Image 1 (cartoon, rainbow, N blue to C red):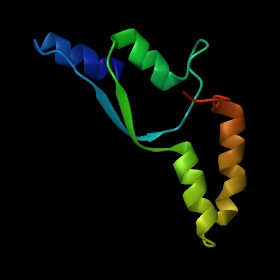
Image 2: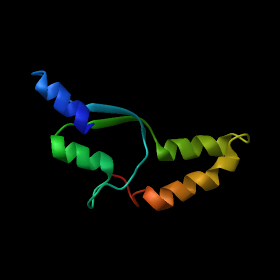
Image 3: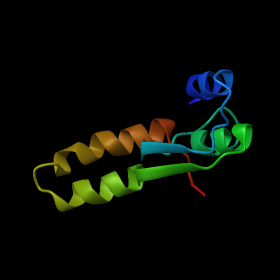
Length: 85
């Protein structure tokens, strides 16, 4: 996001928002999530097509994927934010 923002600004345009396919709901460098840090740093909205919670809920409904839940929960425990606003 940061690199793209700089490229867009260098081209004379003003970025108005960011769309991400999957918000992994990760911790940022401070007390905010990575998405919140982008929103605050650049004063633009970040919109997600899906979140990690959406992915978990989908995995739970598919018997062929349910075996991945432990890995996803491990990822969330290691990198995730506790609450996402």
